[in-house]
Length: 283
Image (cartoon, rainbow, N blue to C red):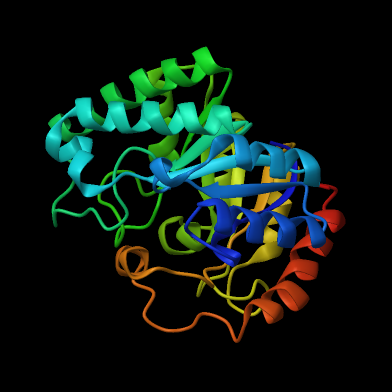
């Protein structure tokens, strides 16, 4: 998962044939090393078509998702979530991805108003154990992304993510951080990276308003400096929410445009992040 990539939210959150063609072509034109595919609905994906597009463009891929409400393991138990993740992992493998990550332990917008219970976390752990085992059988890595308290009550910080990974004990699991969520939840931007340590293998580079990187209040030197300090060698993925369908916008509470345009994010935010990565020896 090494290199510099981008989340498909820059162009589409719907990975059907048309969305795949549009996003892969645009991603290749910008010179990214990999693309992060939003695998929110595995049933609309044509894996052979996606694989051919990626191979032709010379792009590697990572897939990510959040679970639909009908299979949230904290509420419904592990069975439905495991079935959904098994299908998603099969699709990710078929299209040639290296990993599946994201809010694989629950849903975006899943909160109860209370701290997670022991039973909820037990169900999450059982789900992740089964999914990680299936991923390993396919040769895939399997990540979990802590997200902020307004999007889930289950796993909010790097330390909580590490605790869950160590509880499950699967050697193909990794921590996936996101600077937008870190800016809300961590006591310092470096703390999330340092707490993640050797488990950290992937990071979303997202501004404090989810818009153009470098134009908000994320402390980028602290983020990159901490990654350099731990010898980070994982994937760096720019994430800015330009194309948001209503059902995703609701869970993310994205009610207004977060950037002037896609062109502005690519013309200003992308070189900012690449230059910072080069400055700290990460690419």
